[in-house]
Length: 345
Image (cartoon, rainbow, N blue to C red):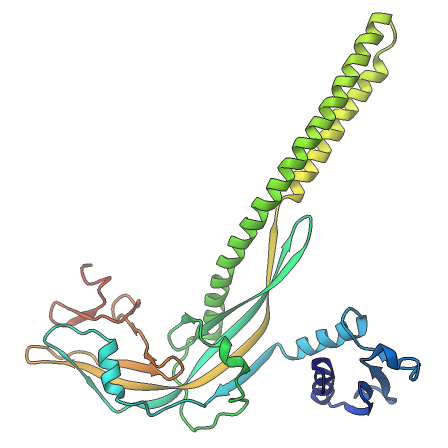
């Protein structure tokens, strides 16, 4: 059975136009495109006596770290399509009318659905928390670029075998917000998580620092008390107390320096950088809609979409304030609004 590391080596060698040959189980000859002679690699430490020129490839060794880093640099941006979904849902119009609430006395008139590819972006950010120790984490955020909204249902699909590098259908692309704006939406979401985690780590570290500072203050207080006793005895005997006075001043400086160092180490700084970006496109059904009724004036046409990934109708953008909404209200008999801004001037 091929191990994940072996599969990684094979895939990476092919991705960089190199060649690999399995000499025996877990022992490979690999020819990189910028070298003239192949190198022998093994994933099995017990194979080294039989192949003394082979290099061991395992976690914790610099060679594997270099390959993983190079592979990650090559794969920072990718684009995949997901087409394995039902684009002819049962009674679609009824589902849309059930999901959306329209004013009393009106009906939602829907045109035939048309599929469009909707672009998403999934951003992976590397976060480094710096202080007396360094910790790192990867945090992701996915953005629907049709509506500029954060979504949570994409990452479970990334292991689906239905993903491909080419689109299956000749559907047009739906309008999308600029990638820069989608990046800012994702980054804002991640920053909120980072701030929360950094504050939590800082509180924990400050608690530890407070206990260390208390112990250190007691230690230096005991030393200062001992010096005070020695100074009193020296004064009573008429001896020179200058060295003891200097020692006391030095202790005060040392205590202040160490306590200040503990307080500085208790602080936490966070560094954030975009590590990987995945463009994810999938078909979605769009329907043109308008409100009709016996006493309803002419209303602007709306664009309604139904997402096969979630099997739900997408929330509408309020025509007035732009907020996401499933409820429409008529104001002044000619203006559509959401409930949140219906009472505003």
